[in-house]
Length: 256
Length: 273
Image (cartoon, rainbow over all chains, first blue to last red; front, side):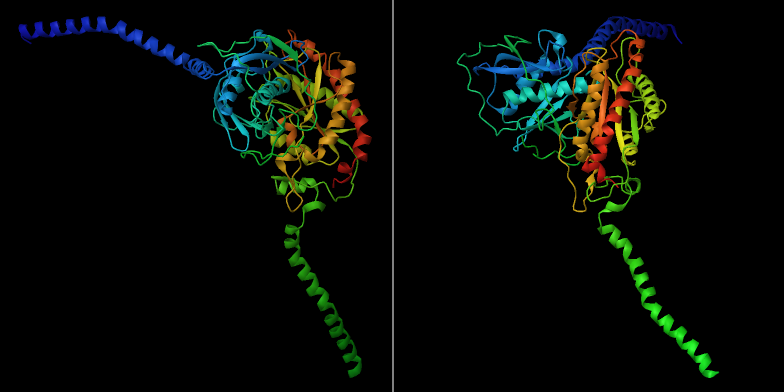
C-alpha cells in the first residue's frame, strides 16, 4: 500500500473513532431511558386510567360508599363514605368508584386489593351484567387464601352495589381472560351477585360542585361506619352464582 | 315301536317350539337394552361407573335407594407440585404444611373407624376436578379441603362452605359437573357449622359458625364438602402452625363423627346409590 493510501486509511479510522466516542454516550442514555419507560409502563397505564376518568370537573360531588377491610381485624368490611364527582353514565361511574377503591384507604393495612392492580376496563351489558377487567396484578399480587380473595371480591361487589345500582351482577376478567380462580381459591367462572334490587337512578348529587381539577382523595375517611357482617344468607352481595357452563356468562338466577 | 319313537320326537319339537318365543324375546330384550340405558337416567348405576363413563356429569341424587351410611372421608391437602400456595416470609409453604395437617387428620379419623382417602400423598398437584372426582366416585363420603391462609388472625381457623347456587338437572336427571355441590349445600353447611363449632373451642378467636365463600374446589364436589383454612403463613415460626395440627385434626374427626347421624338421616344422602 502506497504512502498516501495509508494516510487516508488512518485518517478514516481516526474519524470513525471520534464519531463513535461522541455517539456512544448518547446511545447509552437512550437505551437507559427506554428501559426506564418499559419498567414504568404498567404503572403509567394505571395512572392514566385513574387520573383521567374521575376528572369530571363539571360533575357535582356525590356521596360515595367504598368498602375496605374493617379495622377491627375480624375479616369483614367497613364502609367509608367520601364525596366524589361521579359520572351519570353507569359504566364510567363504575370505573370511577373501582379506581378509587383500588387507590386504597389512608391506612394501607385496610386495603382489600393489591396496590399495583389496575382496572383495565369496565363494560356494562344491557341485562345489568358488569364485566370488570383487571390487570394481572389482581391475581398475582393478592395474598393467596380463601379469606383474602373473598374479601377482595366482596369489597368490589359491595362498592358497586352501593354506588352503581344499574350493575346487577359482576364478572371478573384478568387481563381480558376468564380465569378459573382469582388467586388459587375463589371461583371466577361464574358471576357475582351485586344488586338484587331492580335498577334505580343513581343517588341525587349533593349541590356542591367539584372544584376544577379536583381528584378523589386516595382515602379520605370522613365517615367510616361498620358494614354489616357478611352473612352466608342466600344470594348475599358478592356471592358466586355460576349460572351457566364455564366460559359463558351466568344468567340472572338468584332471588333474594 | 314307531309310536314309541314318534312321541318323544313330537315332544322335543313341541318343547323347542314352546321355548322359541322365550329365546327370541330374550334376544330382543338384549338387543334393546343399550338403547334403554341411553335414554334412562343412570340413576341405578353406581357413582364410580358414571364418573368413569361420563366425566362431565355426576349422577342424580333423587329416586335412588339407600346403600349405606357415612364411612369415607376424602381429605384434600390443597396446592402442591409447582403451586406452593400461600408463602410466608419465613419460608413457610402452604402446600407442605397442609400435607402435615392432612396426615394428622387421617390418623385421627382412621382411629375413629372412618376410611380416609387423600387427594395427594406427596408433592404433586392434581387438578381441582381430579380432587373432586375422588370424592364423587365414593359413596357415603364427606370432603374436607385443607388450606393455610396468608391473612387473618394467627392461631385461628375458619371453615367455609360453598355459596348458594341452584342445582340444574338436564332432562335425563343428570346434574352438571360444574354444579355438583348444589344438592349438598344444606348438608355442607351443617357439617361446616359442626366442625367450626369444634374448632372455635380449641382455637380462640375463630368464628362460631361456618362462612360462605365461592371456593372453586367445593363447587364440583358431589358430597358434603367444607374448606378448613388455618391462619396463617405470616407466623414467624413454622412450629406455631405445626402445633395446631392435632387440634385441627381432632376437631375435624369429632365434627365428622357428630355429623354422621345427620348425614344418614338426610334425604339427599338416603337418595345416593
